[in-house]
Length: 304
Image (cartoon, rainbow, N blue to C red; front, side):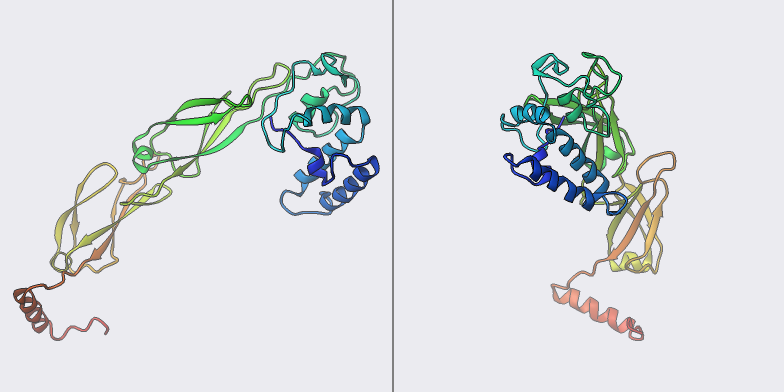
């Protein structure tokens, strides 16, 4: 779970007086109250401020919290309290009957102060599911097409690393999520671990542009192929195929290869965009060929 720096959340120094903490809490609570502030994230900030005040307004809770904070933890760092803390089993504090669990508090607060709540006996920790971990991983386009495996390295709460091998299903698209059950943060009080949610991002490819399941390829062709028509090889994610270019084609013309995009229940298509490349004359013979071509099409005006 993540360590919460309650002093930082309230914007006060660790040696702030009770009056300073109370004043800071009231100011921020008014600022982020959901009834007054409709901006995105305001409600979450309001909950964080409320939790920080709950921890620091009580002298006994604040003293216990300061012991952990003295260990050099920072906001957002991974943190795991000693076993039994907050349930009478460690640190000399027992918050089991203080109603610590009432309210919408984080796992950090519940683990540190016991998560007791009214009507729960001492030593009965509430089983809570661990939080999910969200991460973003990249894969190449070919793996997204055929499927494959990739490795993900995660930092755990003890400072070590976990290496997971993740299966990439064929036809996955950018923005889709792979869920690995039980690979998130550990649960509390015997609760199950959370999940690992991996958002997929497909890396840019030199040959194809991707939009959902549709892929686009720009195909260079010669002026005579465009004018007279031709059958030329074109790359696809499944290998080269022969594409018929209609005579009289212009640059920018789009031809569709149905079902040649990313696979799925409805496979995507491949769009081929024609790009006419004009050779530069480098010899007298090539220059003469262009002069003859110009004479043959003397009535053609591309700007008309």
